[in-house]
Image (cartoon, rainbow, N blue to C red; front, side, top):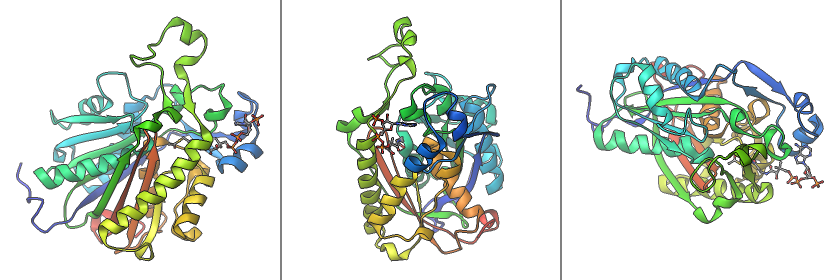
Length: 345
Ligand code: ACO
C-alpha cells in the first residue's frame, strides 16, 4: 500500500478518535450495598459520583473493538487502512495472547502486527501514542492505538479502599501522517521501577500464581495500593512530566489552551492544577462521571473535551498521565482544522 512518506511535510498525529462507555451507570449509593462506604465519603475524597460497569457478556476486546470502530469512522478510515495495532491495558482479555490479537482478528484489519503495552497502568495510552508516533515517523505506518480497561471485573468488590475508585471504558485513536492530524509536537515519559510496590495487581503472574488458597482468601483480585504514596507520586510526576514536555516543545504553560490529565481522582487533579498554576477552565475533568478508567481515561477525556467544544483549531493541548510501575508520560498536541476532526472545534 502506497501512502505519503512521514517526512513529506504532513504532520504526524491523531487522525481519528473514538470511545466506548458501557451502558450501566453505577452510583456511589450502590457501593454502600457492597462495602462500608457512603456517597459523602467517596465524593469528598475522590470527587467521583458515578462510574460505568461493563455488562456480564462484555469483555475487554468488546470494549476495545467498539472504541476502535468509532475512531476509524471518525477519521474516515476502513480497517484495511490500518498497518499496526498497539493496545494499552492492565485488564486483558486473557493472560496470553494479548488483547490486541483478539481485536485484530475481529476488526478485519488483516494479518498486521499488533501488540499490547500491558501493565503500563494509567499512563499506557499516552505511552502507546508515543510508540505509534515513532512507527509512523520511521515507517510511514498508520497505527491504531487503544486504551481499554475492564477493571471492575478483576478488582475486589469487597475492598473499599480501592473498589469505589474505578470504572470501565475504552478509547482509541488512529495515529499517522495526514493534513488534518491533531499534531503530536512533543512527548516525554519515564519509569521509576523502585516504586512498583505502591500500586499493582500482583496475583496471577509467576511470583504469585493463582492457587485455591489465594482464591479462598480473595487475594486473586487483590489490588495493592498505598493511597497516600500514590497520591504524592501522581501529583509530582504528572506536574513534572507536563513541564518537561513543554520545554521539549519550546513553549510555556501560557501557550497551552487545555490540559487533559489522567482522571485518577479530583483531589489529585486539583493538586496538579495548583502546582502548574492552572485555572479551573484550563483543565479538563470528567472523573466525576466515570471514575478512574485506567488507560482509557485520557482518550475518553480528550474525546469529550473535543465533543464539548473545549478545543479550538490551533489550540495546544497537553496530555499528562501516571500509573502503576510507576510510569508517567506527557504529550503536547496541536489541533488543526480538518473535515474529519471538526466536531466540537
Ligand atoms: N469509604 C469509607 N471509608 C473509607 C473508604 C471508603 N470507600 N476507603 C477507605 N476508607 C477509610 C479508611 O479505611 C480510613 O479509615 P481509618 O482511618 O479508620 O483507618 C479512612 O477512610 C481514611 O483513609 P485515608 O487513607 O486517610 O484516606 P485518604 O484521605 O488518603 O483518601 C484515597 C484515600 C482516596 C485512596 C487517597 O489516598 C487517594 O486519592 N489516593 C490516590 C489513589 C488513587 O488515585 N488511586 C487510583 C489508582 S492509581 C492510578 O490512577 C494510577
